[in-house]
Length: 104
Image (cartoon, rainbow, N blue to C red):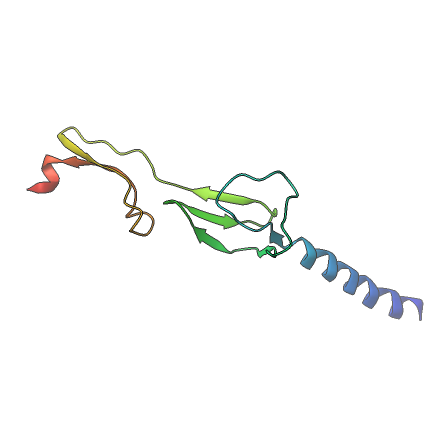
């Protein structure tokens, strides 16, 4: 009888603990102190992706944000350079060289 009562309670407790951990703090696009959360923003579910300042930020299973930004590009026949274009989505917003071979 005790087993029939303990196992369901253990399942509810485990589910509650896991669901409480499956979120990241709100994303603001800037560094905030650990644990800082204003009252008007709620935590973000794991797997959420936010595009901000030409980078993709993802809420991971460890309750932390990871970011993927622009790489560094070069070419041998560089004739110019294109800066960030924040009007475009990632990765089209990334800076890159203008290569003579691309113009032909």
